[in-house]
Length: 228
Ligand SMILES: *Cc1c(COP(=O)(O)O)cnc(C)c1O
Image (cartoon, rainbow, N blue to C red; front, top):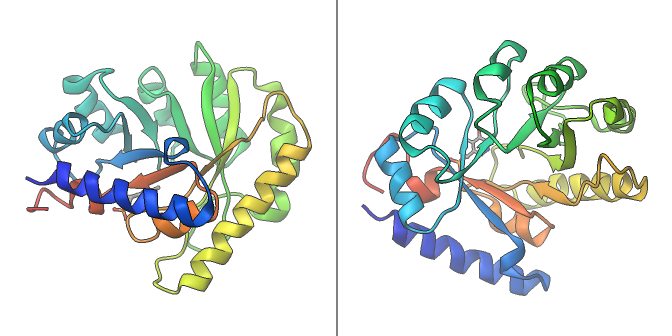
């Protein structure tokens, strides 16, 4: 198994993207997305030096939590049904998919502590994508002030599945631009200093455009436990 090799390659690519963009690799957090793979594979990622794991379903997260506990820092990265919040809330430190007030309310109610949240934005405008529409973002964020357990640390997006570099870049730029506008509001509850963007196929571009957290599945831990 070559998770370690994959991780080394990813780190070189991050270094390269950072050089291009005049950024520091230590400012980029790699989240290993383990949703396709076994707990053994997730453990390999941890042994390779990855500190952050991401899952997009409560079942997957709970199954891995049973074995790995709080060895890694856990991120919830997928669509989160309101009724599932109670299952995962004690286990995760980051939720990347805040996209509606009912969800904010439930997280606030169930969390006995501050939870780091990303507001998910649909910058690509694709019908199928989750997330707040850019034009609704500022009103949405202003409404989050009353939920004291939510710490709005940044914005998240999923770029379209394409190899069109210009299109990817323009999506990431849009998110960065929205982030600067939120930061300018100086909300104490929403410092919005982070950008969760970039996956296996596009993390280098995302980093060039300002990503601080990249969510990497296939390129790091493989898919469905095939040889990577
Ligand atoms: C699956 C998933 C990823 C990782 O995808 P890869 O292309 O395998 O790197 C990242 N973010 C989210 C929200 C996902 O659901």
